[in-house]
Amino acid sequence: MTLNFAPYACLLALSLLPLAVHAADPPAPATTFNVGVASDYRYRGISQSRLQPALQGGADYSNPNGLYLGTWASTISWIKDAGTMSKVNSGSTGFEWDFYGGYKGEIAKDFSYDVGGLYYLYAGNNYAKVPGGVNANTFEVYGALTYGQFTAKYSHGLTNLFGNANSKGSGYLELSGNFDLGTGLSLTPHFGRQTVTHLRMASYNDYSLTLGKDFGNGVSVSAALAGTDADKGFYVTPAGKFTGKNALVLGAKYSF
Image (cartoon, rainbow, N blue to C red; front, side, top):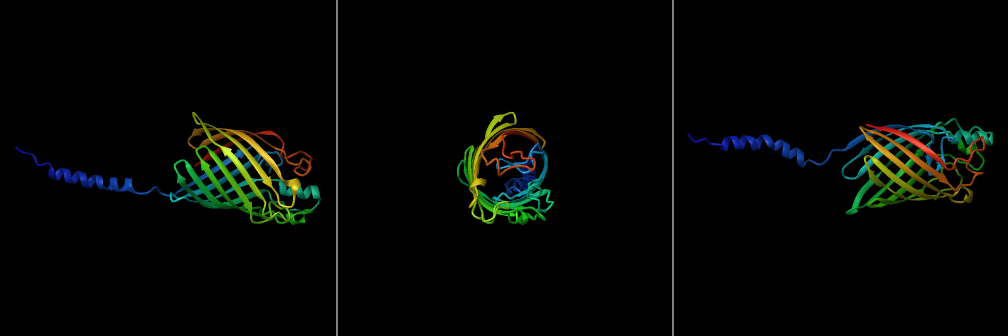
């Protein structure tokens, strides 16, 4: 007796067709969320939370074509603190809410770019009541180039910068690296230069060295040595503490 395998071969091919089509489909867009806590919210080396812990969280959308959008928020205290020191009502704004979006692409192997915009919202702030202040809401555009483990990024303010009057056109240049140490460990050195237009005393350099640990399942922690050479009379808390001082900053985050 001779068995004819042709019908069975056809059936097998038809059954595998959906799998083949699925494998050829492009990656689907992805949305992720994150929540975290930090022992101090440092942004460009300066504490935004009066050298105290901060709660943070956000959401990110990414498309395989390179488009991305996101939002992120953190508790802060610097706007209220500025009002306290100036004895004015600068608003009880206790959080920062960011909105950003951009496009990432590859120029060549291991050489990529990232361009976009970032809006910092401080809802209900009355920072204009602070001497020399204006509305604290800020919008920046940025561009970055990454080659291998190294990234250079420049952010340019299209509005006044964080409540400083006549500071439109301020810029922040940063250089960083990202080194995989294995077993979920990473090391990230960073150096930045913040220039504030028409306000020399607000310009400064910042630096940090961050050790991160990814435990998997969305759980990660970090420890960063951070500091600045900022003006100690300009960047202070109501108690007179320097908000750009050298410090160890600890963080933990859960992404899902």
